[in-house]
Image (cartoon, rainbow, N blue to C red):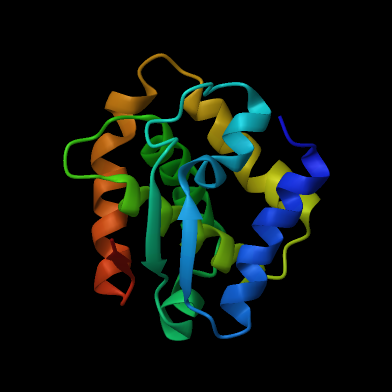
Length: 156
């Protein structure tokens, strides 16, 4: 397993690519569930060997999502989409949710520690429940659709 520092570096590079204007991202499934790997909750993410190209919502959409409630929802949906099989939610949707969550965190100016402790850790706590996939599947599907309405896209 890569070190925590190298995993954070990969995630930070994705945020930097977005903020530099490169809204098309190549996201490997294992990178989508980056923090999930660290937590040990998902040794076999649902889309571990998939590669997807995504386009996160444009700046206006990222700004609209740049609040604590939206980032909490995106963080949870990231783990659910990356680690659960959900009808209507594919690897590309998981990548879109993850990439958008990272872009929102970057737009909000969160440090790695703040992002992890205030958003990702609470999401991990919810995902660790036995019924998490069933309980959060519909909301995750809705979030993927909402991101597409805001201009996000899965280009596979």
